[in-house]
Image 1: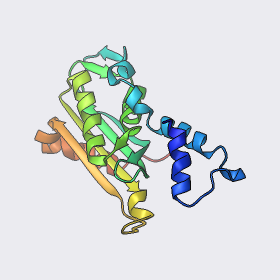
Image 2: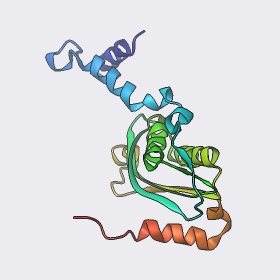
Image 3: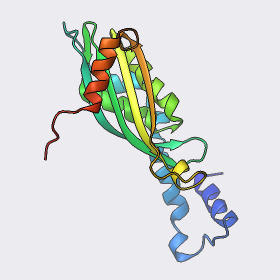
Image 4: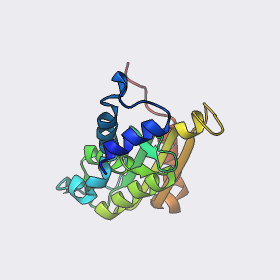
Length: 188
């Protein structure tokens, strides 16, 4: 059965008439939308990183903060979204910054729980670069908590994965956390 047929049946089960003018193309649109929102299943992290790893004699923290992401809760198929902050300490290898954002998108565009999403991003960076450390912090609003269930509109979930120097060295961890908490002046 095609996904659009399943959506059509879901509309019927909800008490709607899929033949109603406003819903005629909804099953196809929803199927296409779900395909887009879960495209991460069809992407390979190694292919995304591709040839964007470069040799560089640098051991200073590289930080990419405020990376917007959108994902779908695997428990309710409702969106969760927010910001991802990630850093690594190079060990003779660096990566193009846009590839870091692409890794976030790749895993976010799957049915997820935020805890796993955070770890998958960190593990991918660790495996690709073998850096001295990796840190990933994600802050997200979950519509499954805002629109249903406990209905807490202002709740923000924060998850982190710290590897290597970010886990073992309190000064490195503190520097990372200070940088994501107190950003440089925003551009207007």
